[in-house]
Image (cartoon, rainbow, N blue to C red; front, side, top):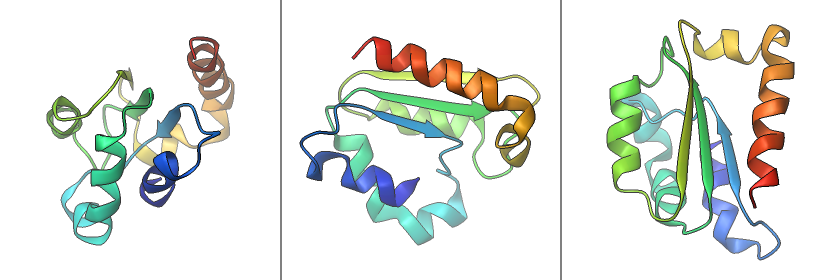
Length: 106
């Protein structure tokens, strides 16, 4: 997610960005910090979807990071859901609906 986020402004055809479980936590920031900066500075619309029990990024940390984000930023939190749980097949339909709804606004 971090590397894809750094490419958003490099590709003109990309008109928005959807992140499913974007890792803004400490370890991920050490590994991918320069990529985080690019997506936060992009003026293109962004949707961040995260479980409230994500082991990599807390809800508070996500909210703090997104305060500095440029452009339109939306978040959707999945109550009681972990990072890898959200990526499982039980949430595929919900993820598709969230992405579809976001795309419809672009």
